[in-house]
Image 1: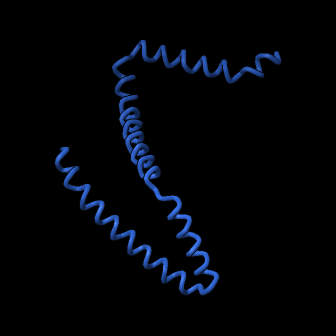
Image 2: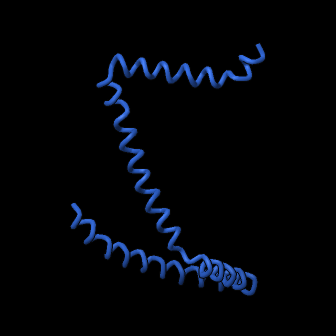
Image 3: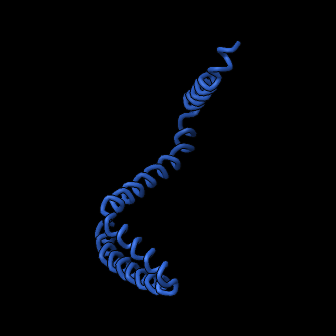
Length: 112
């Protein structure tokens, strides 16, 4: 009896997949129609994850750590200076994002 409870997750896993195999065998078109949105969402999530991985790989971590250090020093010296510095960085990031979106927009329209 101890063996059954210790490996209950294996039995549940096998039961679920045997049940799903029987459902697919009896109604394959309905199974495809039910699973197709999930597969499309998974493909879209994979594409988004690949884009995130590329962005993370291109990140300048040394520059980011230096910037964090300068922000910390600014916060310790004068807290109001920190907010001024952050406002400048946010403006810079907004300009970079606008430039990137302007560059990426023509590429996206050419692909469609």
